[in-house]
Amino acid sequence: MRQYKYKQVETYISLFRKLNEAVFVELNEKNGEAAKASEYLQTAQQKAIDLGTFIEEEEGLGHPTVSVLEEFCEVLYDINEEILSERGLAASSARARLDSIVNKIERSAASEIKITRLIVFLPYKASMWDSLESVWMAADADENCRALVIPIPYFDKNPDGSVKEYHYEGDQYPKNVPITDFESFDFGKEHPDEIYIHNPYDDMNYVTSIHPFFYSKELKKFTEKLVYIPYFVLDDPDVENEAALEHIKGFAITKGVINADEVIVQSEVMKTAYVKVLTEHFGEDTKATWENKIKGTGSPKYDKLKRMKKEEQEIPEEWKKIIKKPDGSDKKIILYNTGVVAMLNQEQKMIDKINDVLRIFKENKDEVVLWWRPHPLIAATIDSMVPSLAEQYRKIVADYKSEGWGIYDDTADMDRALVVSDAYYGDGSSMVQLYKELGKPIMLQNVDVLEKEKV
Image (tube, rainbow, N blue to C red):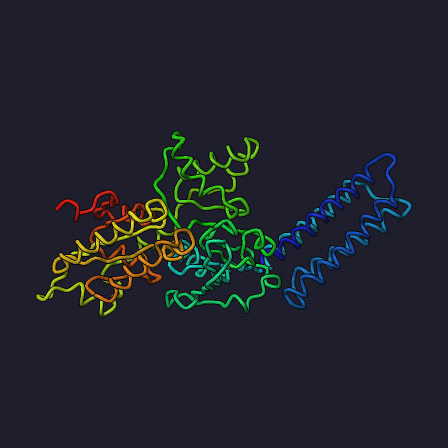
């Protein structure tokens, strides 16, 4: 039986206990009425029949707990006959007999009804799957759990906020991850026990939007528990620093965080930051809500990195040719990451910086490989937020790819680039925090410094 349906069994048992107590109160009161107690007993009997029918529909005929419910009905009948007889029945005796049989129902249900859970994971970008992967792996390994990965569609946005290009990346997930088509899954009928998301923005994102059906406020209608895990990791902030907390607001005060039943962040420090920001925004009386909802148990992105080994990564043949020197040895690989925030803040200066970086690495291509991995939403962000730069940016990318002296990585596998590369260069981002875990060199780029101007 599905977990959310088993809650109905628990509700019935709780009702039986309340009716038992009501019978005791009526029989124990000086002015209590046997007729009223009899009414409670009859109600309990009907509810026992209803519960038996429910269990048989879910578990099949002849279920052991139904036999115990039939025994319960017999006890109810006997007690009803006794309290309506001339000699009556002591309240304590009635309660003891009723409590005993209800306890037996509860034990039978707990031992004889196998509870299963349906957990659904709703990633939208395949490159962000690592933020959910280890949780899915644990659920998939649980024999009492059915874990489904259902990639959902999203749309790029125009500068005016209207939607344009449609995207669905269901074919870009690792081979070991079975994919369920979102159009064939009936959320209302299946009613997942838990739903996991990594997009918290609903309609608040200016660059992209997942399909409105999958907004967090809508998903809450279909599940007992909505869980949000960020697709990113950040530097743990100084929770006593107002500027640091101000930065966290954009991540914490989102609809996914507000609507979720549980939020899992990267650390206890980050939990403290989220709680502080949310409490300040919504009021001190909400603090307990955020304390209970937000868990600082760690990001699955770290779990993924720990599992990966450099020698096990699949590298395309054309990339291998770029990495190898003529003598067969490997060049040093520099992971170059360009981010969305830097592009929005620096605009033309960022375009100039990218051009300068590519020129320097091209000049040194015999010794060092540039592995350029831009943020997966950077092109869509430029189109939506700074369209005046779109043509320049696309030309830079097209020229770089056609020249073939470096690696351009727009695949869904971000972690491969982290594990295979020797050092990091680029903008501050979630990738920097992950790179720190690997203990490799990190250098952040400064858009105000152009090598060509030093000559």
